[in-house]
Image (cartoon, rainbow, N blue to C red; front, side, top):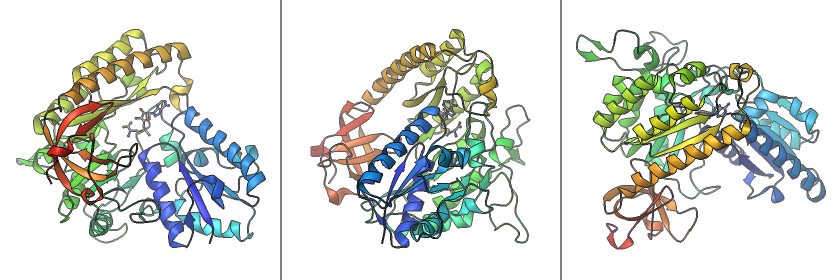
Length: 481
Ligand code: SAM
């Protein structure tokens, strides 16, 4: 049977989509190749969030094809995911040796299309059409053998698409409208993962706090007596009088109901989710942190900017004050919660004063870490047509300043762990040094320690002895064995 090499660019959703495609192909008898040099099929799962990511994938495909033509005639080439969706057939016009272009609603068709291409039944396939129900097709996992060792953690896709339409972002155009899976469907997948040894599940979506906004999340579409729930975004609109407490009871968004349902799974130790939207962080979700012990004390809350003027231009739907209020409530509900963020530097029209507001917000919040993005103009997004696009050197200079601040705050925060005992879930050998084991604290910090394979999957208390760059080290002598 043919072998396939899949390379993934971009976010955790892309990683998850690639895993589902790999699992689908393995189930059909394909083997997974370690590199493009030994594969019959090369698939690049692409990202469109920044131009950089698109160029990297295009360059990679150009070099793979160049080498493949010499070394592996007959090799099949495919683009999948966001760039495949946004560029479609244009990719084949640009690189005529590409055989397959698979959009974001078509991952589940990879095996069928590759079979046709390998059998010579079709010369080229481009499929970027919308497909109803595709949100429920990213289900297969590769937990054991094949690509990974026995997995302790798993990502579960709960929805597809995005309706937020931030002015900088291409995602609503590449991933389509928000569509959520049902709670029973998601819980069944989680149960199966736990039965296979998974201890920690991360619920995944572009904006998970919008989960279940449309339609019914308890029963399949079209079935009788649908139970409808408001989504967190509507419930927690900052301007509206709080509808959260009706007759003293806290109304729960569909997302919180989903967390509760997953929380009931016996044998599951930890629940995470990513990415939420700050706008969707209502009191019901904050309260869930205080009430549900499996929901770990960690939150990734993309702020993007500390300036209200820029937040408005970005169409983010919250103010700096509202964001800080969410952080305050989360810290009150779960002291020690780890908070990370995404920040865009150099949005069109961002002044030095706006940027300084971002710096001051970072000082105020003290993020444990933040992913910094240099603003990138994306085709057909409103921000691409805004005046005052900033020159590269200004973006570079602000990025360097912000990075220095984030690193300095992160180092300080990580150092507070030294000497403390903390619980980790052991995931497997460290990526950088396979002689050591790697685990994660509940607040999402990686801990490296001298353990062995028998620790995999265990919840261990370790004492932190020193810090590296966004990494903690535990003393093996004090590992609770
Ligand atoms: N759910 C997230 C949110 O609440 O905004 C969006 C996830 S997005 C795929 C990941 C990150 O990419 C965003 O948070 C943003 O910081 C960054 N990003 C998106 N569009 C960008 C652009 N045009 N230029 C630079 N960074 C961008």
